[in-house]
Image (cartoon, rainbow, N blue to C red; front, side, top):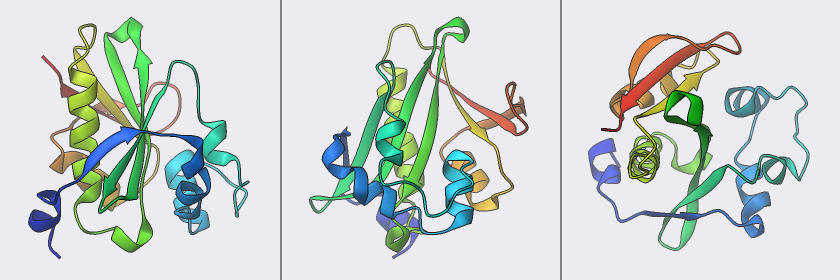
Length: 160
């Protein structure tokens, strides 16, 4: 299936619930994926890794297709910057390469951009993944500089 076909497939985001914790964690299928998703170093990660990401001010979502979760991502508030950050984006390894990361980014962007206090949506790339960079660019994010709190690239898409 090519990216154009998949990105038009029926898929919706729903709020994450901990019943999917082990499913999302199972998508972290290598040391490299662990590092790319959360800069983790101990592979395999703990079973409660995904639940450890949950915070009161973080909105976590799953992308579902055919009643199955296929991607996960979070929206973190950045009120001082009138922004939000999309983080911990991961796609089921059996579905990677189908454009679902772009679809998830676009749906998370729509969710974030609908907030009154959000002027821009950010993603930070803390690794050298050309696949992730391409995904962010295809979803309309532009490279604006380097990340502020650790080495990496900062990308932005304007909300309004």
